[in-house]
Image 1 (cartoon, helix red, strand yellow):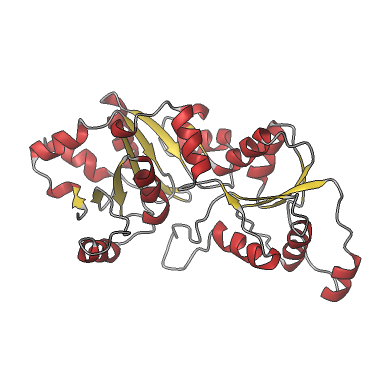
Image 2 (cartoon, rainbow, N blue to C red):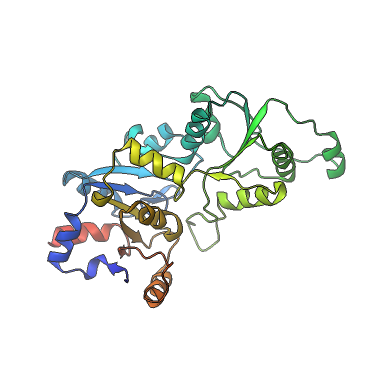
Length: 307
């Protein structure tokens, strides 16, 4: 099986595609926007999906914002979204600890998006913000006194990541009873230019190495998110479309759930990646092959308007 380009479908094939799903789950960064810049044509495509009666949900691995903040970002970029239509990994971290009946304090290597979601659930936290080493690292290790109330380490995207944070997280995780939570596995974020944009997975892997432990991962394509969205939205996998720019998270999630999948090339995955997929798909059973791909999401709108 190879992936089919949306714009190469016949009118009948495209009609069959469009009528094959009732629910759309879409990634955000790299599909709908890149950081603060909207991807041209994507808002109009989302609106068209809704006009056609499709339910549309925003499923993002981003953990730097809360759900209400994502609602505001959607409005700014001309998307119509409610809090119930958004799932982000900062929120999932709070959901996870709530399900665990967590009553201690979380040490957070991440952003205020995570801590705000924790506060919504009444979960105490510490560690947020800059933690700069003052003086000798040996003295810092000697003098650090772990907070006995800490019962979880949560790792997300942290622009203030530092050696002190690494040491403290690893120290807390020496206790096997302390939860180790990683918001998502993405080692790269869609970059606004040609520079590399390291993602949350880089921080998680560093702390995993320092602590000799593996984090429980919550975002795409992990089981926790799958169970949450299937139950929350009462999904029929055969009637659900997953859209994303990352084959290893978005498309893998769709494949694990039995969703139809559409890969767009405005984020992480490139045309050369697609060419490699199609060149090896016939002989590699474990390769992740999206059902369809498009240069950008607006290609779907172009096909709708021409059919």
